[in-house]
Length: 257
Image: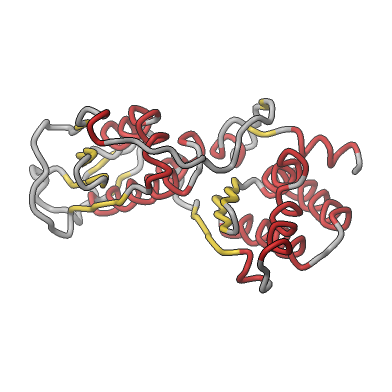
């Protein structure tokens, strides 16, 4: 592995938004890309309700969303709850609460808003959003967190318009099972996640590898480059060849900024 490739593997910008804007801040690599299952009983958690008006959510309309929380993401959700509802309430002006009985996150548009299609919500950067568009952004943000992305990376779905999430399975690339599938996961991850971090930094994306499921957060073009690198590793391409390709991609992206 060359010095430049080793640098890409050891550096991880603080959040995806600053990475895309070229303002890169380095922090040590210590983040696991998936959470272990943690059982949490309903009795141990007090009801959490955060709304912009304090009213209860009732009924189901086109301005109402319910998002089921997987059992392995319930504990991380509790820990990061304040970081999740703050941008939704303050920036998107939506109402949100956690329904502990059904284990669902509930979102809705403020009922005081008459026209949900009118661009009446102003974001901190001066852009105008319709309540329905804001609701979709909040939905995407929460879904990304539940997939395993950190809040500081998932919030880019709220802040930026050209950020998306693409998901696929390693078995969709090549039919693998048992030890062969485990080896493929190891090739994609690399030693202590080094290969995965190299792909992230070279393509300006964020990647979550959970068993054989891969989630990629970034722009359309960057997702395509990251996905090709992962597929090449699964199909058996030598890591050195993939590193060289990523180094060229990284230099081109640096020149574009």
